[in-house]
Image (cartoon, rainbow, N blue to C red; front, side, top):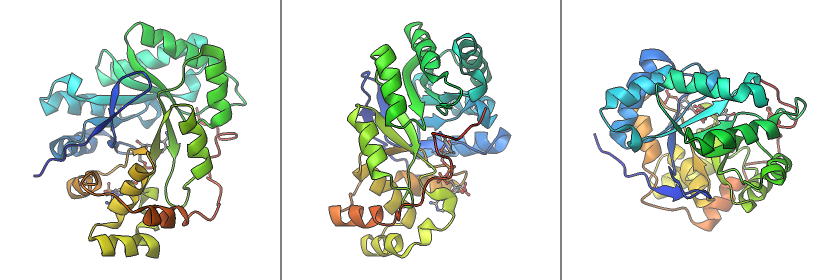
Length: 279
Ligand SMILES: NC(=O)c1ccc[n+]([C@@H]2O[C@H](COP(=O)([O-])OP(=O)(O)OC[C@H]3O[C@@H](n4cnc5c(N)ncnc54)[C@H](OP(=O)(O)O)[C@@H]3O)[C@@H](O)[C@H]2O)c1
């Protein structure tokens, strides 16, 4: 099978992160191991997991079964809500590391800010201590809006390397993304394909795909790159994994980027970071 050379981008702490990675939710067990092994053959090196996905063990198994050196991979995991707070961060992180069977992660994110709980700033401080110890290469956040990033930067002076946010054609979130990127934080899109719930049949997306002789998924994923946004689309299907990664040999024209942006008619995201709670 063909292999794509997925380019990397430099984070604000100097580390390199692939522009595109493999989302792993909700797959688990042997199905996920096989999916990751296929993705690695297609050129994927970034694997996106989380304590709450219950699949870090499969990610670690796949890394070992790939036969590639661990340093070839860029592994992301996330601090669950239940582990927020200074006394709990280290235990949550250690549990992830044990499940992965690794001695460091490349990127560790606070999964959700949970502002009503009010512990994300101290959690971030504790993650910076783990970075200092070499257990985390890059410290980042997920589902953080401008106000949450400001709070951690005000407390620590350290700008998150990455903010993983829900971004897709129906939730283009141009203002949110601009505010986050202005800090020097790389935005990474989750659910970029909206879980294949209709956006890949949207006439604007299909029209661009037909004209450029590419697939609708490639239109959406390239639209993100052209907005300077990285992404972690999930697929357990080797053919779709390859298609999704094959977006670095072309670019969309600014008019096409604007047309996809216009699909967003302002419907709010269901999981609003100001109120969403999961532990
Ligand atoms: N930080 C957070 O709060 C957060 C929240 C949600 C998700 N995430 C992360 O983001 C990743 C991606 O998000 P997601 O899984 O919710 O949604 P997604 O990547 O938008 O969509 C995945 C779904 O789309 C299908 N698909 C993939 N490529 C396709 C293609 N080319 N054509 C048609 N269908 C295709 C997949 O099916 P097949 O497997 O059959 O191909 C799968 O059902 C997750 O896996 C997870 O790692 C993070």
